Length: 227
Image 1 (cartoon, rainbow, N blue to C red):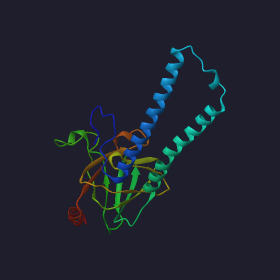
Image 2 (image 1 turned 90 degrees about the horizontal axis):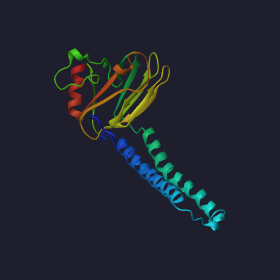
Image 3 (image 1 turned 90 degrees about the vertical axis):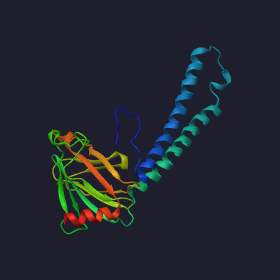
Image 4 (image 1 turned 60 degrees about the vertical axis):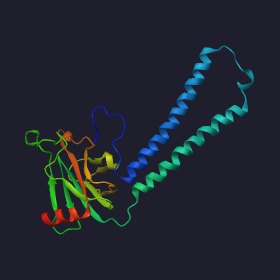
């Protein structure tokens, strides 16, 4: 999860988030190069009175500064589209979980099981145990198996919400009357925190999400104990 004064992303815990971080670094490097070039040219124009008259209306220069941005846009667009299609792919999910947003809590239903569903409320500050995080801890965590593709079906019962877990690269709107889906797969076990990312009313700040990713045998033991 994030730490105080953090400037970058949270550590990636899924293949999609790793791809997104690589794309971010790739795009940021292009932005740095363009900014450096523009600042250099501006500094050059302000610091010298010499004028190269043959380049003021040269066709070659206009051709270069038209083609070069097009090439740069292609270098950004191609990896972006690749990741976009990767995020939409769902290949034989091992588990499906339906998430419903309410004012102001989440409810979860494991659709592969006959009767496994629960509501997840934020734990009040007065009930927190040592080591638990204020405004981020919940009474019922979502336990999922690691290293397996999980399909999340996301919707809402009242207003717009947004189900977001940054370290897994997930952010999907919960819209009343519409069922959105997302895929998650964690490469390591642990607790992953998120929050509602759509302003949904007075208690919008108090809709945390906690995913507990565990090995498959521990998930099976947990699901058996819940049934």
